[in-house]
Amino acid sequence: MPRLRVAKKHLKVSRDTCQKMSCEEVRVARMWHTDDHMEPCEIAGLLRRDTSTMTRLLLLQNERKQDGRPVALDGAAVDKLIVLLDHMVVVSP
Image 1 (spheres, one colour):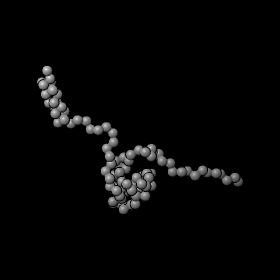
Image 2: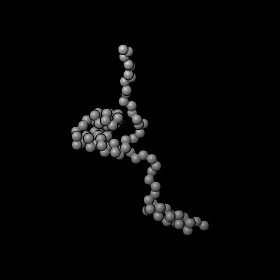
Image 3: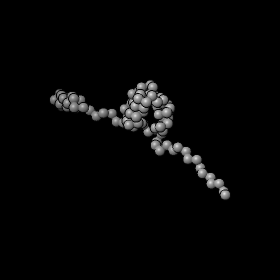
Image 4: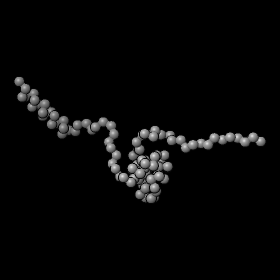
């Protein structure tokens, strides 16, 4: 009887590798590390992330940088600009 050839299925990463970790992934990784005392390499395997990413997140404890557009002007800054504009209109000849 002929043997069937079955190709090995590789674990496929179903996400973009350059995508930032979601807040949920960060929360779960920190919980596993602190509560269950798992190593960063174990957590990286479970979340399908690189081990250096987990080490950076869990051991170095650096804050993540803000991504995207800077925050718009708050109310106080808008009021200050309105006062400045009014002053410029009054002073102009």
